[in-house]
Length: 386
Image 1 (cartoon, rainbow, N blue to C red):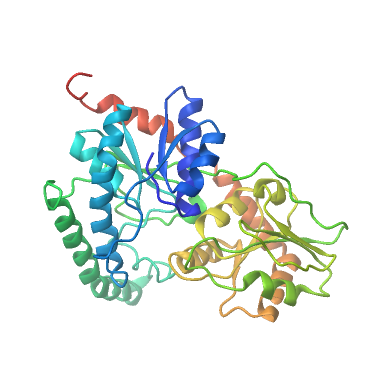
Image 2 (image 1 turned 180 degrees about the vertical axis):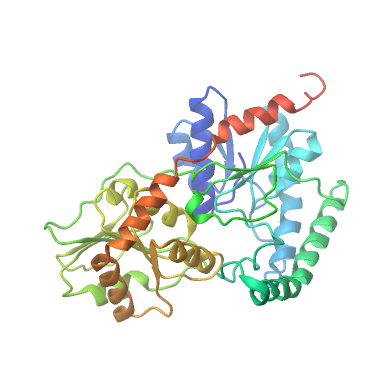
């Protein structure tokens, strides 16, 4: 397993490693050093992933260049580790493409893990990030065609950057891609497309709790609002503070799930800290979050409707998908009043809870990620000496 340090990518890798271990396999995880002790404590062999530190030649203003050239460097750092561990299969996070490159260099089959919906371009969808539903009718299809044409140059540039990175480490310029793609989301957050790849498998969200501690909700019987500020660097800032200010006097209780710290002073109707989110969701009536995939999917599989305060990255796209499905309200721009109004709307309208329950019911219609990986191994040709 290869994944970067961001919780939205490291946590699914840990979750999948635990599934492999339960199936009798021997997972080895390479990820950000922050999560190595936690993974080891969970019973997984885990090591820091080399090559994650920024380099002088990396262009922070060019995400494509940074992603692909860093991937090539990571693959070189990873090669001796993979050989030392006598690896049979690599599962590489979609943002940590160096794992796949290293596997290809060693002749090892590899699988790509997307801890979110399938974000590959499609001839039947508007570009990712627009938040738009597929266009309907002639004008709608024309809109999508024009928007895809406007993004085609960036996509082509990314492919060129990937080719340059590959040739710099002795790989063919053309990327053959993984043997399979694990799409770790729920059907409610996917969209139909006419060109779904045959190698892509929706396997459900891969969830892992970084703590066994339980966070107490404030006493009372009033509705419980769970606030989960985004862990992504693109997340909206100040969400928790705005939510607390806006919800004051609204007759609700608030419990805030945070990885690092929290407000030093809280009203008696609120609590904040690090605690198991799955346990909090069993009692929550609504979740306020950034719209990142991990928290959004976790809320929906528990049947809890959501108020999303999306930041950058894919949060706008995901927030709109959840809103179209009926289980979420989008707040943008966020203010204390707009967040409180959205929470009140969700609590007062049972349609949001019904839509979230529908999403939860559909979450069971997924494939087993371990079985997909075992099938890849069964199809692969063993390396010499195996």
